[in-house]
Image 1 (spheres, rainbow, N blue to C red):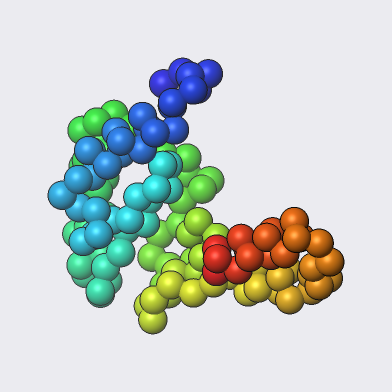
Image 2 (cartoon, rainbow, N blue to C red):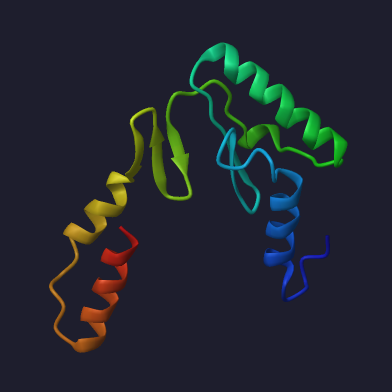
Amino acid sequence: MPFGLKNVGATYQRAMTRIFDDLIHKHVECYVDDLVVKSKDQHGHVNDLKIVFERIRKFNLKMNPLKCAFGVSSGKFLGFIVRHRGIEIDPDKIQAIVEMPPPKTLRQLRSLQGRLAYI
């Protein structure tokens, strides 16, 4: 896909959503080029990976092996920590907000509000 186009991000996201349509929020979480295959147990994880790999092969998608991690119980995804307990905020992001100087102008206050809204 040519990445010089203006709407390429939305087009790519729409393609990924259509490819993994029946798996999203059940076995897969997908955001642009990030995929997380989630399972309750190891045996189920192997089956879920098999389904996702078959879908990737069917639509001739490529994976970067240097960016892949398999069989992990937690990890970073889109700036959040995903664990078996649920989704948590990355502690580095919290620390950056805690260490910020107090806002002195309206613009700085709005910037702080935007960062807090992210969390």
